[in-house]
Each structure stands twice: as structure tokens, then as C-alpha cells.
Length: 278
Image (cartoon, rainbow, N blue to C red):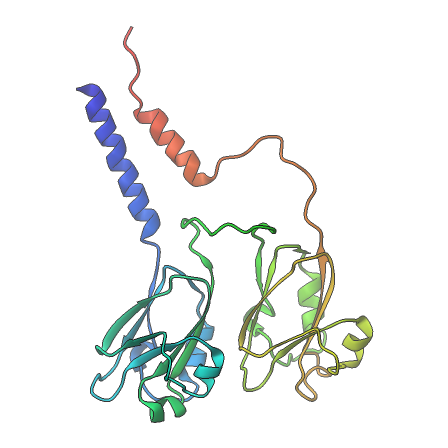
């Protein structure tokens, strides 16, 4: 009987712990008090101040008689309000859409004219909630996420050496991520090859071009990475970034350490395990 009671108590505590872990996801009301309406620029400003994670949900509230929500698959469909091949369509007036995977998620109004007027939303899901097991990565470990420029984001700085100082204050390693947030109507991100191109703001031979407004760039190998913008005068004014990427640590830990969650489970198991009577 004592063993059964102990087992039940252990299971109850474990369930409560798991419930607490899995209830950390957030629900965001799109547009806050404005809701889902035709307001140009509203949803870019609304989304850029938030960090969306796997498990979070978007709540769309609107008049279902004149509006709706269409989820599309690509930035091109988003840009041109093309709803011919929707990924999903919502039309209840009170829709909750759960973000089930990392990456870009595109939403436009089902009313084409209102979409053209600016009623569209793109969100970028950066990473999972800490207590949700992340998907395995085959080559590189999980690193840190660095939001470029922090609160200043990616825009022409007041001081031309702002991004130089920002980079020098940090240590970047293979596996880390750079998150570029910016107004895609004003700027973009070009990765270039050399220090000479960086100093002269040469945009003629970029390694890669990013123009999504919310770009995640992974640092996959050691060395120096260079980023500028193609907009005339902006790079010259200081909108450029050079980061030194350090290699992975080669040291091997002496013993495997348990995660905080595993330590909690071990403690629960040890605490509620029945002890033999002598």
C-alpha cells in the first residue's frame, strides 16, 4: 500500500511539473487593440518587437463579413498578395494559429484590396521554448542568438562605428546565429567576401543577399564574416558589420552533466522512492 501511494504521489508531482513546463507558450493577439485590419506598416512594427517561438500562437480578431486570414507559403505570395495556393485559410473572425515549426510564417488578408493596403503579417520563429526538446542538428550544436545592434537593430546608426563596437564586445563561435531585424522597405543585408569590399562598401559581388526584414544567418565556420547594405549612402554612414567567428571548443567534458530538467526528475525519483524496512 505504501509503495502504491508513493508511486501515485510521484506521478502526480511529475504531471504537475510537465504541465508547468508545457504551459510556457504565449498567445499573441495580432495588432493588439487594433486587431486584424487594413493598416499599412502596422504589422511590421507589431511583429518586430516580439520573439516568436515554437508553440506560441497568433490570435486574429476581425469582422468575418468583410475579412479573413490566408496563410501563404512564400515571400513572393506574401509580397504580391497572391492567395491562389493558400497553405491555410481562416474565416471565423476569431482564429488561433499555433506556430509549430521555426522559420518564416506568412499571413495576408483574404480581402485582396485590404492586403494591398497593408494588411499582411510575416513572423519569424527563432527557436523553441527552453523546456520543449529541440529538433536534432546533424552537424553543429546549438549556439547563441545575437540580435544585431540589439535595440538599435539593423539601421543607419547615429555613430558610424556603432556596429564595430557592438561586434567587438562579443565573442562569436561556430553554431551561433545572427538575427538581422530591419525595415525591408529601407534596408537589406548583403554578405561580402573581403575586408577591401567591406571598407569600400562594394556591393558588386555579394556572397548572399537577404531582404526579408527578419533574417537569421548561421555562423557555420571559423573566420571573418562581412555584412553591409546595398542602399546608397547607408553603408558609408556605418551600416556594416564585421564579425570574427571562433572555432568550436575542442575540450571534452570529464563527465556528462544532467540538464536542470533531468536533475529535477532524478530528485523526484530519489525522494519518492520507497526505502526497504529493516
